[in-house]
Length: 355
Image 1 (tube, rainbow, N blue to C red):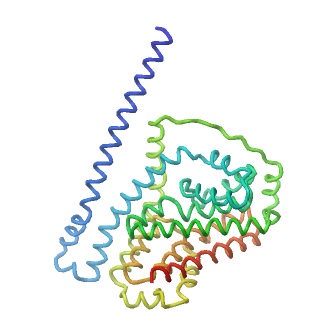
Image 2 (image 1 turned 180 degrees about the vertical axis):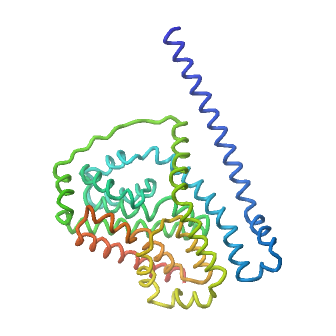
Image 3 (image 1 turned 180 degrees about the horizontal axis):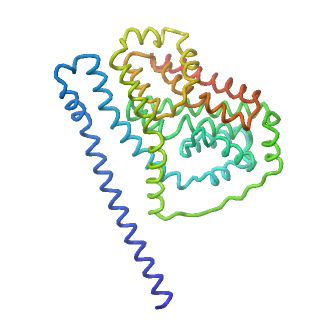
C-alpha cells in the first residue's frame, strides 16, 4: 500500500470524525435549548406536588431552588464549553508570550482583556505568577491579568447575563476591567518588584521562556470544550448547589424590607461591610452568583451586592494564603488595598447609577 493511499485514508477518517462531532454538537445544542425552555414549567410542577406549599416561605424557597439549580448548571455548561473552545486559542504559554515585554498601560489593558477568555482559578495563581514573571511580563501587567481572570471571566459574565440581564453584565464587565487595569497600573508604577519573595526575584532575573506552538484541529477544539466542562463543572457543581441553596433561603425567608434596610443604597456603610464579609468566604463565580440573584431580588442594592461578589472572587482569604508563597506580606497588603479600593468605588458607583 502506497504512502499516498495511507494519507488519503487518514484524511477520510478525519473528515468522518469531524462530521460526527459536528452533528453531535448540533444535537446537543438543540437538546440543551429544549431542556432550558421547560425549566419554569418543570419547577412549578415539582412544587405543585406539595399541596398548599406554593404560597409559603418554604414553597418560595423550593421554587427558587428547583428552577435555579438546573438553570445555572445548564448556563454554566454552555458557557464553559464555548469558552473551552475559545481557550484552545489562548494557552497559558501563548498568553505569556503575548504579554511578555508589554509596557505599562497598553500591557495592563491587554492583560485584563486576556483575563476574560483565559479564566484561571486561585489554585493556578502561583504557577501562573511564576510563569509570567519568568517570561518577563512586568509585575503590574501580571497583576492586571490575575485580577481580571477570576473576577471578570466568562463564567461570571455568562451567568450574570442569564440571571440578572445584559445591562448588569455589561456594566460589570466595564467596571471589572477598570479595576483590573487601574490596580495593575498602580502596582506597576510603584515598582514593587523588590517585594516579591527572593526565590521569585531570582526567576525574574534569570528566567527565560520558550513557547510551543500547536494548531489544534476543529475536532480537537470541540474536545477541549468537552474536557473543560468535565474539569470545571465537575469541580464547581457542589459550590453551585450550595450557593443556590443559600440563595433559596434568602429568597424564601428573608423579608425584602429587612434586606433593603441592611444592603440598600441608602445605607452608606453597606458597601464596605459587604466587602469585609466577602473576603473570608471561598467561592467562585458559579457559586456566588445565585446568592447575588437572590439578594437583588430581595431589594439589596446592586452596587453593594456586586461589591460582595467581587470581594469573594478577587480577594478571598484562601487566595491570599496561596499568593503568600510568591509575594511578601507588604505586597499582599498593597494588592488588597488597591483592589479593595477599586471594588469599593465600583460598589458606590453602581449604587448611584442603578439607584
